[in-house]
Image (cartoon, rainbow, N blue to C red; front, side, top):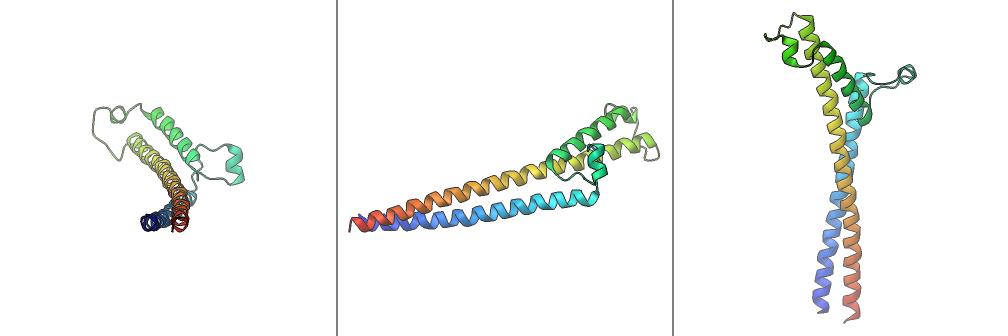
Length: 156
């Protein structure tokens, strides 16, 4: 019985170590992804949706909340041109020489970019949370493995 408890303790410790390593990698990769998205947004110097005070201060869109606000602002601006893409085209085809068509298409493109940034921030947050859960699970498994080893020694 003590031998089984030792082997089980070893298996649980190994699983705990694997969980700690994987969790740490998830956290590192999530933080890196979040940082990369924020850096890319800062490089574009988007200020849409920020207050005048923020713009004067030199702030730019570089967070999930700000990117979401910028996307919402772009939707409002785009819908001021036309409520839908079909309405913007007036039943015809896209004409890149038509300023209204071009503005509408550019608005859709910018809105999509901000929405992708929001999605990327969300995914990186989920990755970080998953990593934190893996680390906590690894600690719990480690404590369980050590406890099993301790019990195995007492029963010998």
